[in-house]
Image (tube, rainbow, N blue to C red):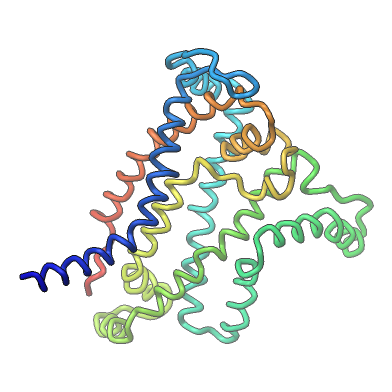
Amino acid sequence: MKNFSKVKLKKYGFVWTIMAYPMLLFIVFYLVCNFGSLVMAFQKRDFLGNVTGWVGFANFTKFVKDIAETELMSTALKNTCLMYGTDLLIVLPLQLLFSYYLFRKIPGHKAIRFIVMLPSIISGFVVCLVFKKFVEGALPSMMKNLFGLKTFPNLISEVKYTFKTVLFYNVWMSFTTALVMYSNAMNQVSDEILESGKIDGVEGGLQEMFYLVLPMIFPTITTFLITGFSAFLSMSGPLVAFFKFNAPQSSYTLGYFFYIQVAGSSSQIMYPYLAAGGLIMTIIMAPLTFLLKYVLEKYGPSTEY
């Protein structure tokens, strides 16, 4: 009995030792920090961060009112939704289609795979700076020489083109992010399943992709959909790397707005307002994320074949 207890103690002692560090991180950086944000959301603070009073739900009311009525916040929300929308409606289909053709090993697929995935291998900040230098310097010169144009706009600094360029960059970089995971997931689809599909009348190409391959990797797709959706209100794309604290207001996203207020200012007056905004977004996104997870798991295609 004593030996059994020792074995059990060693077994569970090892498990608790392994779990201690992530549990500590969860308690300190999630529970404690979020509790501090919860308290802060009901406060009023001065420039130095000293509490000057309790304001009830005033910060929450102001945040909602600003989203509805101020041009800056409504633009930030619209841009955030546009950025996520392009990821969902443009990037995801392209990722799946491209991953499938890599999975079918089209001629030159290794070279194409390397070229497409190169931006995800290099530091994102470096890629962003290279892209910015190209758009501001090499691209105008190239367009003038090739097409004989007298002028060509700076697609980053000229306000009417800024957010369009940000969207393009976000589509380009997001394209490579999940490509590796989708390709690897497709490689796990067995030849037996593909052969069985052919016997049942499923032809190659898009039929094979939609009726066999995608249902088999749907858990992977679900994971990316849920994680992307849960964090989309905090998206800022390349705005920080492009502009630091000086992006034009017409290109703001909610994530960039929060970044500006926290990292771009020495004042802590806005912290309670931002805490209230963060809690509102959490209250909205948490149940919607669980709802999305439920719908995808309940109504998504079965992986059994």
